[in-house]
Amino acid sequence: MKDAPGKYRTMRARDVQQNVDASALFEEVHNSWCKDRMDNGYMMLMEDDFEMCPFALHHLNRAIHAAENLYFPNFSALRVSFGFNGMVVHCKDVGEISNFLFRNRFQGPPDAMTSPWWTKYDEEGAKYFGPDRNNCAYRHNLLDHIGDFSSVWERGSDQRGRFPRCYDDLYFNGMSHNDWFDYRLCRGKEFSPCDNKPTMTNSMLTMMRASPEFDREFQMPTNTKTIKVVKGKPDQDCNDVCKGVKMSCARFALTHINRCRVLRKHFDCRDCISHQFTQPTHYRRSPMQTQDDETCYESHIPDQMVCEGKDANVVRLCTCHDADQEDNINVNLSLNDFIAMFHNKVSKVVGLDYLPLLNKAMIKHEINNCRRQAAFIAQIGHETGDLGAFESIASGHELEMDIAYGNDEKGDGVKYKGRGPLQMKGKRNYKRVGELVGLDLLSKPELAADKKYTFDIAAQLWSYLGCNQLADQTGTDVAAFDKITKKINHGEHGKPDRDFRFLHNRRIMDCE
Image 1 (cartoon, rainbow, N blue to C red):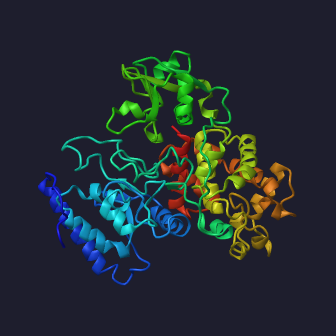
Image 2 (image 1 turned 90 degrees about the vertical axis):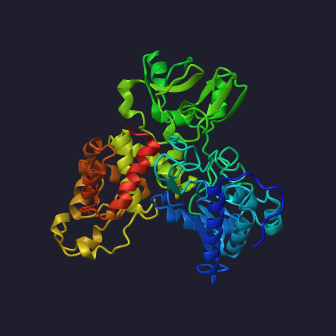
Image 3 (image 1 turned 60 degrees about the vertical axis):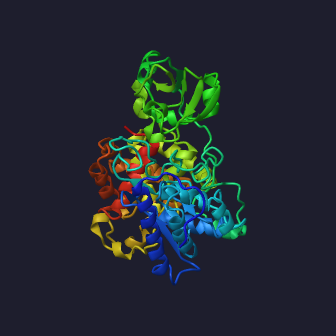
């Protein structure tokens, strides 16, 4: 290996050593794992202070295949996290990365050098990759930083909240702007840059794509009668702002006004940009404007947006609602939240078809607050495989003569097999729920999977089993949610997935 020509930077000894170590690591991978996989192998770098997000491997597998086969054939690098971390590269490039890091070991930290290399801002990278190979970034961050401190920052500097968390948009001011997910230009897309056209036929595209591309436009919750957008004053947090209009801060609705075009309706913005991680924490707590330079800021990290936090130089834009109706604000789900709850595996077309039926059923059966809806849809997501199947693939023979389900005659197990969003099973449930919704499900059990009735039946089953009351007892403690799982499933089959979906839904809906 030869040193790169040119004037060297003044480097910390540990950065030089990090380059040497990283070069040796890539060389080892090149000579071992990648040795027999030069044509079809990949490597992803992961630092020891990161861990995989739940279900990240599913996303990673799909992201690699979608990027490679649809949008960025033979990509130079695929980003799924930040720092010197979460970089997916082809095995055939690993040896050259090793050489590049060693040649340039005196030029800068490894993450600061490799990013310009595969984005082709560096001359060596542009020459190596040529005009046809380009980098891309996956929308979601798939690796979670452990702890609140980083060796990159000054020792003892608390970086709490500065790093993207699991499944946040992959946008981080510690990354090169051409290496992150451009959430402004690519809002609602899977990859950045997002101007690439699919390279496959429509039929193959439909088969490959696991999540739809849909616009996440500004959309307040459907039931907005008690939601009011209020502009504050300097040195007020949103609790103060809403108290001034005799209301309470609606934290869950802050994300719905987090748009520059909404800010411009309430402020005379000199400019409107995303907050910077190097700025004070309160800059990302809600949409706001600074008084000294009249710049408006939108936040891109929803779970950092809270009602608390104030500063003399900041005017916040807040969402307020009637505190007496707090539990029932989220009666109707928005289309975007509905799709997100099913991990973006439901198309917009399917969402528009099913959502009105689901909302109608939830209103009818009083699944009318955040906890109830988060739990209800978590169970639906698991039971149907994200709305993929409304009838059990099992024959039902295993439930023959099972008194626990009320199956007291031969053939009842098959006849009253699992159907509908909650995979209702058993003669007893079919009889009682059918009576409650006014359908003869004993004679026509297939109606439980009929789109016209299926959500109403599932919501009635939910109510009949007492799941609303159990959901009201849930917080972030999944132990209470597990009681619902036992009601629905007569056990805890699929508990990790159900629990993850429940917490995922609570976060989307911003449940207290």
